[in-house]
Image 1 (spheres, rainbow, N blue to C red):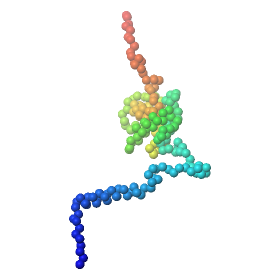
Image 2 (cartoon, rainbow, N blue to C red; image 1 turned 180 degrees about the horizontal axis):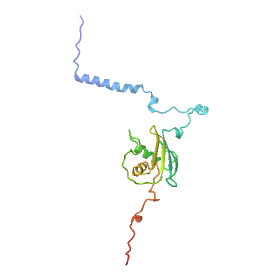
Image 3 (tube, rainbow, N blue to C red; image 1 turned 90 degrees about the horizontal axis):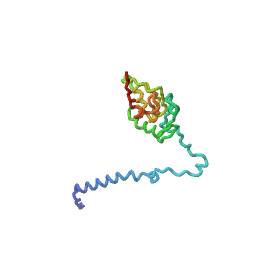
Image 4 (cartoon, rainbow, N blue to C red; image 1 turned 60 degrees about the vertical axis):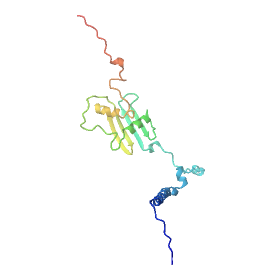
Length: 195
């Protein structure tokens, strides 16, 4: 005759402990598969023989970076006309303010919207002429090709230009060389005319 010992009844508390233990083990299992070297994410050191043999990859050139724009400005005035190259992420290039140019580009970049889009046809704009300045921006921004032109032919196009300052140079009104001061805005005293 075979005797079978009765097993204690499984309680909810025992079942909960067993499931909790299995859950912890399942979470820790992937960590055991990661090699210790990958945890630090450090590349191996460069061996002297690699340096001597020229097996090192060439240094990263500015033109190999992803975000590169060439800005050509004309008729904007002395010190503003010219060709500028801007590299972003990290900021570099032949531009008076590469960090500011990259900052304004980052601020104007939104998913699904072209930061270089022209004024929408049919937009009602003020009939203000902002001067003869023109600019062309070409290159790559956020992985997309860029070929945009800018001018200051009306209020909308002036606002579009000003939205890209300091990538594009700040332009003051066509008849002014600097912003007006309070003194230049005050009316001249009137003189009485005697008959």
